[in-house]
Image (cartoon, rainbow, N blue to C red; front, top):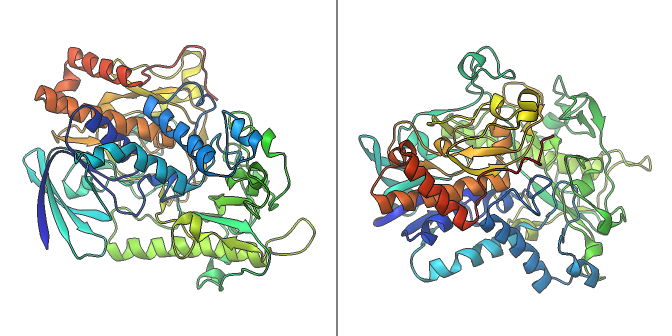
Length: 538
């Protein structure tokens, strides 16, 4: 059965970028429909279960006001509903997981609740219907315009054709781009094309960063060993040339130096959780993998609230880079995603049965998957964590030379006349399907150019997530949580501005007065367009 719907702005993909895009558009008066494939809105933070990867200054500067409201909302939710200790509740910089990867490590479900609250008034008024779980399966086009997107329910029983004036692709992998015939790039561009010093001589479109199927674990009484995964023997035998040992192990390349580094693992170490200070410019924080991405630190809660910490496993050993899942046939993509799930389960089984312990023993059978935290029956994340997807061929493409600390030096990152936001993260590329090791390049605090959100040809499509005009290399620093939110929010405000002025995005971008008008609206909404000169990269 197929139904027809009409809206001004269609946002396909309900990750952080999609949520921010919907909020940006509806705040500026547009009628919006938001769609999502999985049960939870929020993408990286929720269905993919990845705690926020953020820069060191995030508590004061370097994100949009609405992203800050989202972060504040997570802390407020804990203070209101969770049995925190008085000391933890009083901390303005509450980090519920006391994880070293982020100043705000939290359970995915809390982010879901905050996002739903932020959307609630617009959903209640009928201005922001949300369709889920649905996937885009086709687009109707007329020349250089997308006229409608066909959405199919995940169970395949219903279809909805949504007609829209402006379409925002906020999917995790740029799913609308091939469906609508939009020009795009995948994988590694050549040095001849981009001039990037870290690029190869020849383009490698199938060379894409690893994806991961994350999961949460606690350490409980009893034996919680899972059944031996079907592919355990395979994954136990995998030894990438550059890894320094088996993939399932404590040794792996250090992302910044490529030296083989041995991590430790100590469940519930009894550390001083109040003393944790997450700042990746000073300390990557991954020495003890248990505390690295910990999302519940039991000692921040009243005695008895949690019998164990809960930690999120998003470690090098679950990076799946045996083959890409983009632009391959459906059967191959499904098979590779199943392999990625087997890798994650194999890592857990290895942890439970064979992993060397500090006391000389092997395995922690008390490690237990926490499906109640993941919102799934099997305890794995609902969705794969895609670090890289399709990227539009944009009016402006950000290249390594625009942000690299080594290249830019004291000049700082490139400044854009059409800046619509800011972000900061090192250029962080995980091992890839082309056989590359980590590529990690220091970066300067950077700006987001408006032209990176706008395709060269298609007139009413905007990129609203990790699919903007970056390269394989610069995607490594533009893909993180606060940057994706900023991109999405701008896409939503731009869509509403296009409707208000009766102009296409390309026309707004080509007119400095229209760009200035858009920037003024963004600043009024609390979007930062430039970094202060006192902030420098690492």
